[in-house]
Image (tube, rainbow, N blue to C red; front, side, top):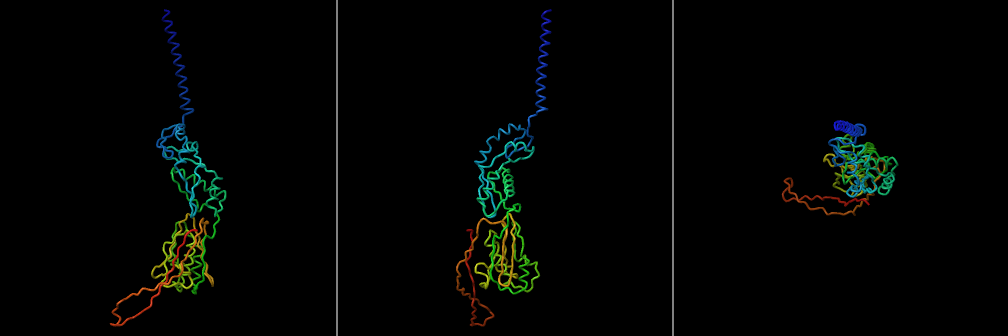
Length: 349
């Protein structure tokens, strides 16, 4: 009887203990699961190139501990402004791991978030691109561009900052002027049409294509060549690239040697150049009684471009023999030829 009572008592105590233990553990599980669940990334979630799918946030945080030092050792950031490129001090950039994990979206590839010091960026811009005055707003804009580019996760990053979002003051970056012999009234019409023309980023400009839309009747190709030559001379003093340019069959009268850009509408001889910058360039052309002038305005260039023209060289024309059925047998017709040549090159100083 006593054994039976003891067995029943022991069973009751054991059941109560198991019930309390189970309830406490179940409660803790419920609290952890429903009230304070561990944050976990969903399927197909990446941070950079690392797969963090179904990984707890704290676990992923441990995975990326020390990532900044590894990234700095293997990465570079180059900043391009107009015609210059400089290396940004990558050792000053901080990877925001907590913010990266907090803002990561499930099911997509997420980039890291970076923090760049405005003071460091301002000093960097002033040192490497001193021709431009960057405002506080410009510095913040540049920082945002750099951070966005770095988030792509590339080890080598190149960012062009000189686009239309900069509020940097635009200046005359190149100009050319020389006397002319233009007598046609249409010369002024061509200059006026060209004045203020905006060459957009990456755009090619064709002189022939431009004047095709103008009602030109009297102006000669020689007069058009003088206007085109003024533009060509200005282009040579910038980082704009020349795609097509020709010289005439005789030395020009008013255009300095080496700076001629011949135009021939019938033969399709053209002046073509392109704007390689991410910012626009404005062309201004003026024509008065004494001179034709061309100017290019835009974001300031870092380098100065100097034109070096070689000395004039006279070349004896080759003797060319031609036989023609229109000339009587035994007769000889002689005609003196003419040629002009100038050596020209340009380079940044």
